[in-house]
Image (cartoon, rainbow, N blue to C red; front, side, top):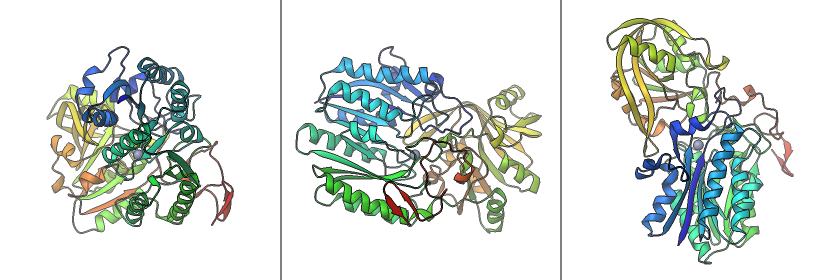
Length: 491
Ligand SMILES: [Zn+2]
């Protein structure tokens, strides 16, 4: 079996103040086969190369294309996206003939002038390989799926869990189904049923837990090969934004359609269970009223994993103003503040301006006297099973709040990052994390209570705050029910 593998992943936030260019990919990871840049990356377990690892384990011949991923931010500038896309497509052209193509894509990637990068990539690849070579695709569930994607892929499967703990399991399915279609053992057909809703849905709690479990049962039914629920990526702004159900069936389009429609309606009926979100004051009040600790508060709106800067000060200011003690907060992305801290050195006490720099949603900077507790040249953390760079980082103490300041923007995945930065999480009353849900896997075991908060920010869960111009209306929760959308009545 000769396979062409490649990936490009970027969750593009139309409202993010942070531009995305080639260096944004270099900062996370970038392997370019034509230049050899980033060659060493493929020696390590790499989420974006999980399809590749599975193929190699099966003893197949793998031709590597581009592997590129960047931390979520604004749509990529056009010329850099085009360079990356062309590298992916040229790699396939050079590799041909191949038996199949396997791609890890996000499903919510945009570039300037390209509202649907995945559709653009898949169209180019389909044109190259023709109608008969299977193209298998793994996606993030925060996808906005378009006709250009479903028309040009053979099999697409999104992760089912949020936090995304099941990328490897879904990758196995993508490889298995794509191989079966190469061998003509199956004839995959896909139906994507759009559901007019926006939301973030945690699969760690009910009713989503049971709903996701029911998807696995659907997949056991005769003729159904795969069922994916895509939650939407609401911080994007184009006419393809929204949730949906993607069903892959074996040769039976009407079965794929009826299954997707049935599940789509059931998902719509769960819409009110989108992630809860409290204001800063509500979240802090709840945390203080709780007798134990630590209480973990997710500052979901400033989640770098959704394209926010990670430098907002809404929680920090409120905590300092209220004189709340025994608090840890991580991480605030502030390269300029880090440089001053590093010059001062461990043990120094200095005046410092923190955060609030990237845009109005980040709030105003916070000024104060800080003590430097720890400095690390090269902080790393485990994210989805692979090590990711956080860059140089420091711990400072302002009032009674221990704060991690770092230089490479990223959400925090686990308490070990606080521990490595000299902060004893068990002794804290409150831990504020700039993450929407991926923190949950590693923080839940140490958290006595978890509170989700949504202050102002570029990944706010209050979708009315977004200045949408292009999404299709009506859509829940922006428009009142009942309404007509995608040819049917939703109530
Ligand atoms: Zn996601």
